[in-house]
Length: 170
Image (cartoon, rainbow, N blue to C red):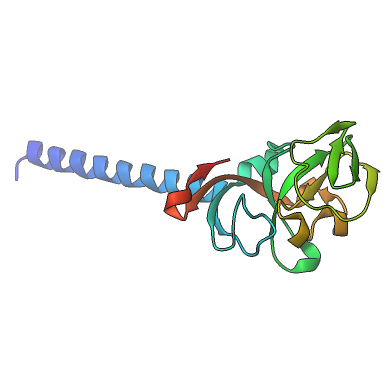
């Protein structure tokens, strides 16, 4: 084999090795920052349902890139599994729940839908969020366990990818 042929083969092998390394880095980054998850339970119906598959952006959890109305996944501490709920109020907000309506900073929330049991009034501490399930009658949420520490938030739900006929970006 001539010296030119050896150089050519080394160049091709080097290109392949670089391509494989780049693909591995991209896949690793995807799995570090984005997690697939399966929804368990009916507390978030109809937004996401039992058995739906979603993608969670972990970077959003670490960087606090979520706000009112976003679906977040957090450590369910006392419930031994992670939970998906909707952020209703953030640190510094005043929250009032009365007669089935939700008010944040004195304004009725667009997420005021559904049954709410009892009256609640509180100021959300900095570094915490108040979360509720969309299926209010079937949800164990901040009305039961209080505001969630933002350090317990793993990420924000960004996409439902299954079932395929209900793909949705959040």
